[in-house]
Length: 262
Picture 1 (cartoon, helix red, strand yellow):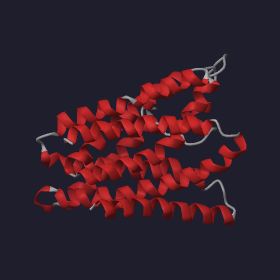
Picture 2 (picture 1 turned 90 degrees about the vertical axis):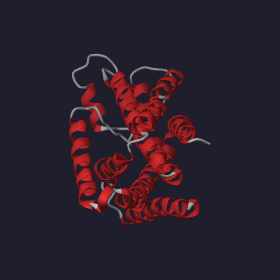
Picture 3 (picture 1 turned 120 degrees about the vertical axis):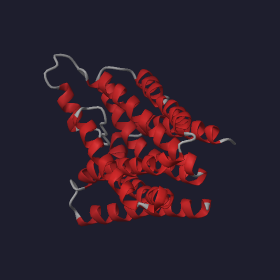
Picture 4 (picture 1 turned 180 degrees about the vertical axis):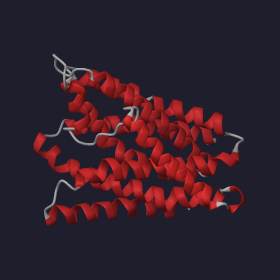
């Protein structure tokens, strides 16, 4: 297949399969969802960190022009700052829990159920998927195997996020079917971002290490800023051990996938 076909295929898979998996997850009893969701978040943390440090960052450092690795690490730092600013502006918002503080703030001051949280989450998710599509495209343009690994890491964290989005849309008064349609619609911005990345980055190889650096920033920021703080809410030794094992499991899945593909 051509690089564009790989990009569009995996962007579609990441977006649509994540939404469908989250929709099926919602069919489970609440007690089961409550028990499984922290495990999904722990695994996603490991997958994101594994993709950042074992796949994306090494490729970025290997392909930087003139071997000036400081420019790549500086791009990672700028990317982290950029995602922080975007989150402050509510452009880039990740929630991986049924009860999300940001969603509660969106409800405050509204006199009706749901308030502005429903539309806000759809728009925010669409922008988020668009950006991920561009970053997935950059990974595929460097190496097909790197693109697959990056897509797997993105999908790992998308499922608990889409579950949270479903909860907000349902609380806004939407039916399950309408919430599913809206989430699928917002996920279609991922292949759009993939095509933008493909046509925008094709022929500018010197830019690839810095796009990979932004992808590294994205993975690290989501894991450290959005996922890990939620894990710290459970302080029991047994829960902590489970979290460590699942984080290591996420890292190992990325490592083994990267190893097998090469």
